[in-house]
Amino acid sequence: MAIVNSIFTWYMKKRVHQIELFMKYPVDVQEEWFHNLILCAENTEWGKKYDYKSIETSQQFKERVPLQNYDSLKPYIERMLQGEQNILWPSEIKWFAKSSGTTSDRSKFIPVSPEALEECHFKGGKDMISIFCNNKPGNQILTGKALVLGGSHQINQLNEDTYYGDLSAVLIKNLPMWAEYYRTPDISIALMNDYEQKMEKMAEATIKENVTNISGVPTWTIVLAKKILEITGKKNLLEVWPNLELYFHGAVNFGPYREQFKELIPCEEMYYLETYNASEGFFGIQDQVKSEEMLLMLDYGIYYEFLALDQLCDDNPLTLSLEEVELHKNYAIIISTNAGLWRYVIGDTVQFTSLSPFRIRITGRTKHFINAFGEEVIIDNAEQAISKACRETGAAFKDYTACPIYFRGDKAGGHEWIIEFDQQPDNFEKFIDILDQTLRDINSDYDSKRFNNMALCRPKVHNAPHNTFYNWLKSKGKLGGQHKVPRLANERKYVDEILPMIQLIKP
Image (cartoon, rainbow, N blue to C red; front, side, top):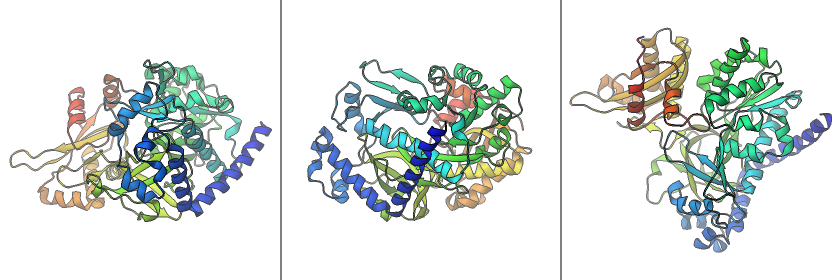
């Protein structure tokens, strides 16, 4: 163990120095990666189509290669799934991360090249630990096990050499031996498809381990934690794992879950570290102890562009390079990667909180918002409002979704929410009022539409019974993995599917 700690300490110091370099010279690092990516892909089918050999500047690249989404790249990816190579990227690609992101029935298969595994995803995983160890000297996380909530894995039957699964499952299947030694539970449990059985098995397998750190989406981590406390009869996770000191989280905003984790892990020294990791790449890590913003990781084989949201639907949108972005504006992220995603719009929106170094916070999704009446409510607005309403009414929410109520005759429109609580608010009507008022305080467009109920009425909020969203996801075959409840939608599809499933609780 001492040898392992010595090796890691050496790596950590070396890596922290490299991170400091790209923080100091961000534009130079991005420019270097741009040229590396173009050079590597110039002889691929895609590179020949757009004549990468003659591209000398990022401006030429932007002018020549259109913005892409999954649908535009799908014909190329489907051929790669059949085993064809040198299509979007030169190295052999055998792994694909199956991603839906929400409850959409349409799955995406994101190529994961050997370079993306090593230079992006695994590098990000090591950087998470390096940053933590640098910020908290004297930690003991390597003296125990890392509990990782993985997804499910299965072989793509179209080609016996092509594999796909949730990103977490793809990573687990490719981990080096030393990393596998520190992970729990056993891979046979970590990659189970049946999520209900998996939670039971995972709890039983890990309660006797010396777990020092946990990685997982907050919603499913809470489910597992409650199962563990139910089995052991303990009051909190520290009674099960006294050396637990670190939680890596991502995928959803952690703010609304923070109070629940304080109850599950009642320790002021517990360290929470947010990451921004998706099937398409590893993008950001929370690098400061007392700030929730994330450092944009610039040397993972990804070239970034950013698009102002008001240009998202333009025929010829003008993207910005890193040096052109401004503080506190919402941008859609566009990436070109060492897995062959070129000028790919991943669907997330971010704001820059710092330009030296470049730090970001996730504000939502390009498709997940409510703007039926010009109110432009994004996920960041919704989660600020629901968090404040929970704090001021003693509530803890579990999940939620919201959508518009359209104009009917001479009646104004509105927003309809379905919220499932872990801890009920002490006054449900007060909760709704705080939710509404907070949205008015932080979103002037919403506030103007709410004036005298002219365009928007007070929100209609349904108090959903326990396990409403769990049962809905289960009914769609979407338990676990990367499947998440869509927080906001500009249509009524999700709310109209869920409402018939619930017997409303009377406040």
